[in-house]
Length: 204
Ligand code: 5GP
Image 1 (tube, helix red, strand yellow):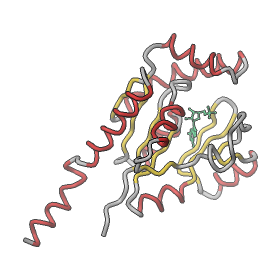
Image 2 (tube, helix red, strand yellow; image 1 turned 120 degrees about the vertical axis):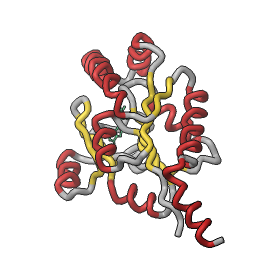
Image 3 (cartoon, rainbow, N blue to C red; image 1 turned 30 degrees about the vertical axis):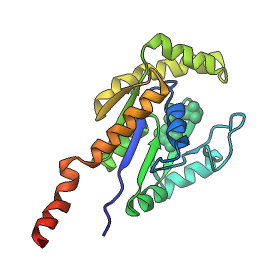
Image 4 (tube, rainbow, N blue to C red; image 1 turned 120 degrees about the horizontal axis):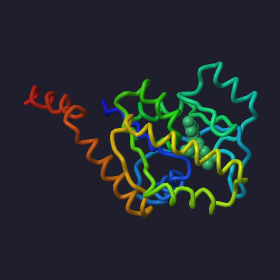
């Protein structure tokens, strides 16, 4: 019997660089996490590929997934739906693999209710000015969307208290190192491992 995997949730305000940090983590050849590809109703940005970056779906298809209970969580964010297909997450955890979600904060709150022993990491911008710069320089959004995203970000930062760890994204590599270290430490947490060692004592 292998242990179940760990559900790792990386969240934080819009524009903090969750996507960049996640891509950096998954570009590392030795990463042991399985990425859960989200479903969204937003249009693909240039270079984004269906089934790799997201499952891009029509609104009706997304709402059907909601009705059928096939999403672990979902949220409407700046006019589009985003959600996590539940089957992949459950099956992968059962196989003993760690699953990595990169989602916004409303979704993270739903996951916390369903998986209270998941590992919740909040990615924090070094400052609000920095956050605004990042949203603006991404250059893919209109002024209205930028304003909406900044407002959403301020509200999102207030939800930090739902998380186990806070990692400042001052430098992508450093943020990734911290996340990897947190996951390693979490796997050694006494509550997670003690039953295994108690069984060992029973045998010897
Ligand atoms: P973007 O449109 O920039 O790719 O993503 C917008 C926001 O949606 C980001 O904060 C991203 O982390 C979040 N997001 C991506 N996938 C999911 C998901 O499956 N569920 C939720 N709740 N948020 C998601």
